[in-house]
Image 1 (cartoon, helix red, strand yellow):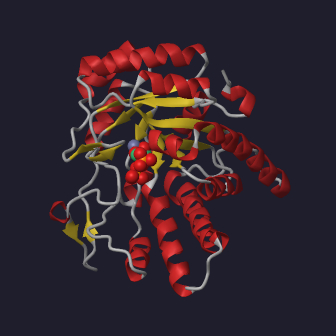
Image 2 (tube, protein in one colour):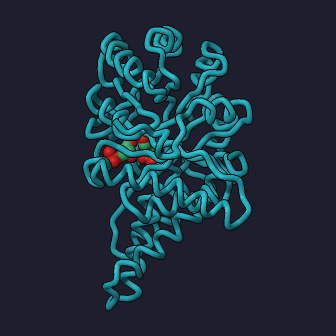
Image 3 (tube, protein in one colour):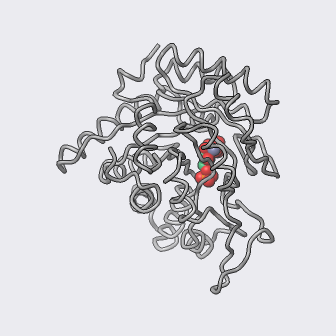
Length: 335
Ligand code: G3H
Ligand code: 13P
Ligand code: ZN
């Protein structure tokens, strides 16, 4: 058993309480490799933002769970070094399992240094979701690990489960779900979805520049949920904004991405001011990384040192995460 407390990590309790009071959201950024982790930590340490490092089941398999744990421990040390060198506040860091799909996976993460886990029972029936989630909560809470549950289904891909339609969260279920499971936070479905193609073009309108504008998130559902669960931490998945500039670069340098549409940043800013205190972003990091790798390799065709093309990609990620913390989530300066 490795406790997250020995790694210098924290669970999400205090982070979320402060975020709700302060009207901002904590960034939950996914990572799979060293450059992504370096970028997240650098950006969050330099903007003094709390951060949730998110690891999916696939990322855990890709990176090796033991190595991941040491990487998270290293991330804590690195963030402290940055803070000390610049005279900034040290930042709280959570290591979180994203979209855990079984009790066993969640238990293994609790046993291996994670300070928070998500059990995503949203593909099960309501009653099965409750049983599964409650079991995970009972185990995780013994070790002071916080648990995120999910009600409602996002369209897109959730850990190999593909849903072509959105099933919005039913506000009338949330109180019962939270009280029967004991979860610490709840992911809800209000129109966001995973990946870089969040809406079909026919669902969107065009603005004066011809750019596709997606339909508004269902803030009415969010408000209903907040009324029924006052002060309770709400989570938004599928919240990448899918920058046109990143997609343009990808396509300019040999990529082929079509109909990409994300969540407008103003809508995320609005959500962050509410009970939404965790916003999940993965695809935006993937897009900028791919864009810069493609560009660098095209500009320098004889280059074969990975540092020379991963370095610019990492720098683009640092800038993107800083701008999210500062202008979208409002978490900068809240460490
Ligand atoms: O919500 C899913 C995350 O973007 C993780 O994706 O399962 O491909 O690692 P992944
Ligand atoms: P995006 O695909 O919109 O980045 O969502 C990521 C996510 O929800 C991870 O759980
Ligand atoms: Zn997600």
